[in-house]
Image (cartoon, one colour):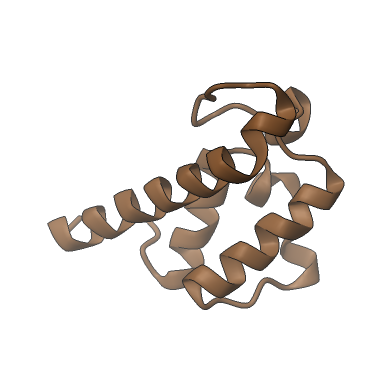
Length: 93
Protein backbone atom coordinates (compact mmCIF):
# COMPACT_ATOMS: atom_id res chain seq x y z
CA UNK A 1 0.00 0.00 0.00
CA UNK A 2 1.38 3.43 -0.85
CA UNK A 3 2.42 5.54 2.11
CA UNK A 4 -0.11 8.24 1.21
CA UNK A 5 -2.99 5.77 1.45
CA UNK A 6 -1.67 4.43 4.78
CA UNK A 7 -1.42 7.98 6.09
CA UNK A 8 -5.01 8.59 5.03
CA UNK A 9 -6.18 5.41 6.77
CA UNK A 10 -4.34 6.45 9.93
CA UNK A 11 -6.02 9.87 9.65
CA UNK A 12 -9.44 8.18 9.40
CA UNK A 13 -8.75 6.08 12.50
CA UNK A 14 -7.45 9.09 14.46
CA UNK A 15 -10.43 11.27 13.46
CA UNK A 16 -12.91 8.55 14.43
CA UNK A 17 -11.18 7.84 17.75
CA UNK A 18 -11.20 11.54 18.61
CA UNK A 19 -14.91 11.84 17.77
CA UNK A 20 -15.91 8.75 19.76
CA UNK A 21 -13.76 9.81 22.73
CA UNK A 22 -15.05 13.39 22.78
CA UNK A 23 -18.69 12.50 22.13
CA UNK A 24 -19.38 9.24 23.95
CA UNK A 25 -16.74 8.13 26.47
CA UNK A 26 -17.66 10.41 29.38
CA UNK A 27 -21.31 9.35 29.12
CA UNK A 28 -20.24 5.69 29.03
CA UNK A 29 -18.12 6.22 32.14
CA UNK A 30 -14.94 5.20 30.36
CA UNK A 31 -11.55 6.81 29.85
CA UNK A 32 -10.38 4.87 26.82
CA UNK A 33 -11.20 1.93 24.56
CA UNK A 34 -9.43 -0.55 22.29
CA UNK A 35 -9.80 -0.45 18.51
CA UNK A 36 -11.62 -3.80 18.51
CA UNK A 37 -14.01 -3.05 21.42
CA UNK A 38 -17.67 -3.36 20.47
CA UNK A 39 -19.28 0.06 20.86
CA UNK A 40 -22.66 -1.51 21.74
CA UNK A 41 -21.42 -4.32 24.04
CA UNK A 42 -19.22 -1.97 26.07
CA UNK A 43 -21.92 0.71 26.24
CA UNK A 44 -19.79 3.31 24.46
CA UNK A 45 -22.52 3.98 21.91
CA UNK A 46 -26.26 3.29 22.19
CA UNK A 47 -28.82 3.28 19.38
CA UNK A 48 -29.13 7.08 19.48
CA UNK A 49 -25.34 7.36 19.41
CA UNK A 50 -25.24 5.28 16.23
CA UNK A 51 -27.27 8.02 14.54
CA UNK A 52 -24.77 10.64 15.74
CA UNK A 53 -21.90 8.49 14.48
CA UNK A 54 -23.57 8.06 11.07
CA UNK A 55 -24.13 11.79 10.74
CA UNK A 56 -20.52 12.51 11.67
CA UNK A 57 -19.17 9.95 9.16
CA UNK A 58 -21.33 11.26 6.32
CA UNK A 59 -20.37 14.88 6.97
CA UNK A 60 -16.68 14.41 7.81
CA UNK A 61 -15.83 11.93 5.06
CA UNK A 62 -18.36 13.16 2.50
CA UNK A 63 -19.92 9.74 1.95
CA UNK A 64 -23.50 8.50 1.82
CA UNK A 65 -24.30 5.54 4.05
CA UNK A 66 -27.12 3.40 2.71
CA UNK A 67 -29.69 1.83 5.03
CA UNK A 68 -28.44 -1.68 4.27
CA UNK A 69 -24.92 -0.63 5.35
CA UNK A 70 -26.05 0.22 8.88
CA UNK A 71 -24.99 -3.08 10.41
CA UNK A 72 -22.61 -4.04 13.25
CA UNK A 73 -20.04 -5.39 10.78
CA UNK A 74 -19.61 -1.80 9.57
CA UNK A 75 -20.21 0.28 12.69
CA UNK A 76 -19.66 -1.59 15.97
CA UNK A 77 -15.97 -0.90 16.68
CA UNK A 78 -13.27 1.52 15.68
CA UNK A 79 -11.75 -1.20 13.48
CA UNK A 80 -15.08 -1.89 11.78
CA UNK A 81 -15.88 1.77 11.14
CA UNK A 82 -12.38 2.48 9.84
CA UNK A 83 -12.54 -0.48 7.43
CA UNK A 84 -16.01 0.54 6.29
CA UNK A 85 -14.90 4.10 5.53
CA UNK A 86 -11.75 2.84 3.79
CA UNK A 87 -13.96 0.81 1.43
CA UNK A 88 -16.36 3.69 0.86
CA UNK A 89 -13.57 6.15 -0.02
CA UNK A 90 -11.48 3.69 -1.99
CA UNK A 91 -8.64 2.81 0.41
CA UNK A 92 -9.72 -0.81 0.92
CA UNK A 93 -6.89 -3.25 1.41
